[in-house]
Length: 269
Length: 264
Image (cartoon, rainbow over all chains, first blue to last red):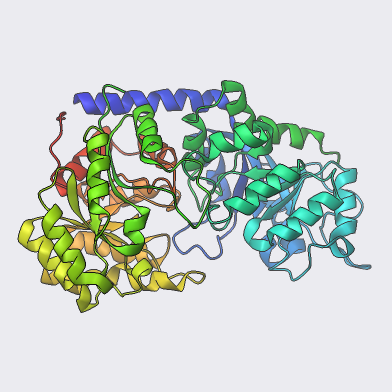
C-alpha cells in the first residue's frame, strides 16, 4: 500500500468511527419504486437493514413512493411492508386535508398505528392549497399529537410555508430539501428559518459551501435534521457535511439524530 | 494540513449573484482545503463563467500566485466572443497556474456541438491542454441543460482525439449519465468529474464498475457545493484504496498535466 493509500484508509477509518458514534437517524428513507429518478433503483425491504448498516444509519423514518400516487393506498402498502421489520424505523404517512366521509388509512382523524411518527404532504401533486382553511384541520390534529409535518420544498412555495408556520406556531414543520438542491433558494429559506422557530430543515440536499456552519451559527443545531433520500441519494453526502463540519460534537449529535429522535419520541399515537 | 494530497478538479470562487453563499472567496476555499487535506484545486471564478476569459485571466493568475500555487485556473471560452477569448488564451497559455480551458454550453446558450467551439478545441489540440465542460442530462425545469448533454460533444471529441475532455458532473443525474459513461468508455480522451449535486446512491461504486478508474476525477463545484459533501462520498465508498487514490489525486494531475510534490 502506498503512503497516499494509507492516508486515504486513515481518513476513511476516522470518519467511519465518528459516523458510528453519532448514530445517524435518517428522516428520508424510501421504499417502493422511485418516481422521476431514472438512475435510482428500488430498495428491497429485505436489503433495508444491510443498506442502513452499510451507510452507518441506526434507523429513521421510512416513507413509500406509492404515497405520492395515492395517500391511503401508499400508507397501507407502507405498513404492510414494515410488518415484522426489525430495524429501528418508523413510518412517515402521506397526509391529505380530509373531507367529510373520506376514508382509508390517513392521518387527520382518529388514531393511527403507533409506528407512525410523521406526516408528509404533497400539496402540488395532490392539488390542494397550504392555507389554513384547507389544511387547518389536519394541522390541528398533528399539533394535538405532537406529530411533525414534512414537506418537500418543491411541493409548495416559501410564502405558504411561512404563513402556515405563523398560523400554527406549535406545529413542527420540517422542510425537506428535495427534489432539487437548496441553493438558489437560500435567501427565502434562511429568512423563513430566522422568522419561524417551528420550522426545521432536512439536509439531504443542503450542501452549499459552509451552509452547515452558517445555519448552526444563525439558527442553532436544533433546527437541522439529518436526512438522506435513500435510495435516490447517498447518505454519505449529507453525512460528510456533518462529519467534517466545524461545529461542536454536541451539535453534530443533535443534527445527526438527536433532534429527530426527540421529535419522534414525543409523538402520541 | 501539511500532508495534503487531494486535488479538487472542479471548483469556483467569487461571489455568485444567483444565490447567497456564506463562503465563496478564495480565502474561504483555501481554509477549507487546509482542513480537508486538499492540496490544490482547479477552477475558475464566476465572472469568467458568465462572460468568458477576456478580462479575468490576470485576476485568476494573481489568485493563483497569492494562493501559493494552489488555486489553478481554467480560461473560460465563450463561443459568442470567440476571437477575443482566443487572443486572451494565447497570452495566458504560459502563465503560471494556467491549467486548461472551460466551456459551458448551458450558460452561454450555444449547443456543445456548435462549430463556434472549434477555435477552442483547435487551441487545446495544438497546445496539449485539456477542456473541462459542464455536462448534464436534459431537464424539465432547466431547459438550457439540453445544450450540454454528453452526446452533443461526440462530434468534436471524435474530430480532436488528442484533446482531453472532462465531462463535468459526469452527465448529471438522468439519462446524460449513460451517455457520459459511454463516451468515457469509447473514447480514450474523455474523462468524468464528480462535481455538482450528483448525490446518487452508490455513485462512486457504480462509476468504478462502469468506466476505467483512470477516467474519474474528484471535484466539488465549490462554492455551489461544499467539498465535504463529496469527500466522504469517495472516502467511504466501497471501492479499493488504490481506486480512491486515482480519483482523489492522480487522475487530475494526469489530465491537467500538473506537477506535484507527492507521488504514490
